[in-house]
Length: 305
Image (tube, rainbow, N blue to C red):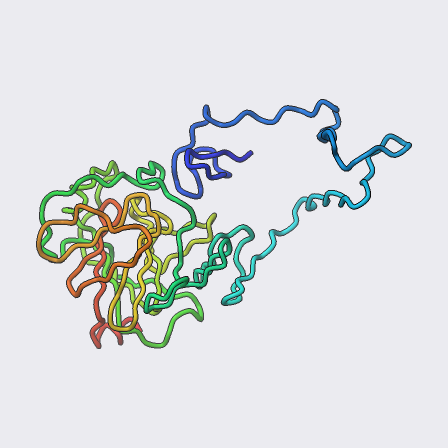
């Protein structure tokens, strides 16, 4: 039986919404539909219905009315939704193409790297600004970050999907655990031990930051699944070859941009518009994650290429 989260999403899970992660209140669920008065499980014809009864007492379709389609047989495989832009097959009911970001609802094309209209990988649904199931709510920040290496995950690069990576790359992302950022977020989860950053080559002009979700078929190129404050489809990074831009996709806790030196950012960027990243800018997301986008050195190209 499906449930409805506080934000109106239908969820197969009854504890947390599998769309936005908000907790589901079982007491607030709508009552189950009452059994049909006919006793047969089928709704009675409404006044003015196009159905009338044949001599045997069975309903027959009036002239010009179409008979209801039969429900799919149990065990029938879900229909694949083919993207008209890139041809990728997506799960039936997907809102955006997971390969190119095509919007199945509005027909909007993905935004190009130069910022042309109608070409970005948009959010898979509105996330609440205080989504309890998707991570801690971002609070006001205080303190300073000097941009020095303070922590992170093991320095291992994820293996690229077969056939999806280019032969070379010029840019990479460093993913750090930032204790200073953690102190401003008031997260309940314990902060991981700081260490070396995870190095992730950026092999595409558009990459998704977020957490892996099998139910939503979300597999971000920059996987931040270890941070509970990061949304499934948190933010999108795009480049024109010389500059990088970040776009918040309606994340629960926001995307923050700040320089390497100076106080930590206190206000998240706006949802939707792209924000250009300066040479020393850092991205702050979730409960403890800091992301640095920079050019790869020749040794790094050789090591991760």
